[in-house]
Length: 221
Image 1: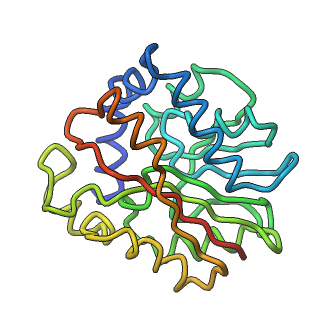
Image 2 (image 1 turned 90 degrees about the vertical axis):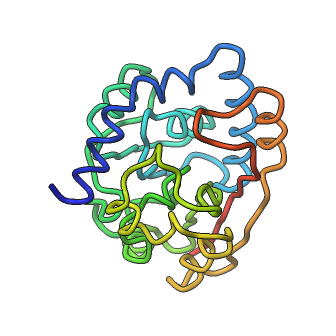
């Protein structure tokens, strides 16, 4: 079984618990409000074509669709796609590889993801492919953190998988930003998501995680 197959299997198995946590009634509306502001600031004004790679259970795709954009979410974990489709809404969910999305060049105004960079097997290849999908002036916007800066967390994957994921071992968010810069994106900016941090402090985080700063990283073609 390949590394990617094992990753897909892991997230399919974890999909119900992951999505249930995302949909906690005491927090789901607060998340929607805060992340709506995050994505609205990062994405083009008006109605744009957006690709959400590694969409998971579709929360990001649905939040962005709620801003008036046309959103396609792709993932290789069938269990996550099942959950995303159950939520309904205007976003379209398809099976697809975040590293190598199968769309024609210049299909989108923006490519986004959240909590995906660290789990990409070839982040440099992925970003190059995302740039190919962008129209002139298009945006890449990713949200992530340094999840395992103090060492591998045994609740995620095994040693073989971690060894194949360059950014899983990152000790600074600048290592993620460097992947975007090295791919040739312009105006790469790292923004601390302080409102998300405060929400995590108030409501807690998922098992196996710590309360820590998350970041939005953006760049333009």
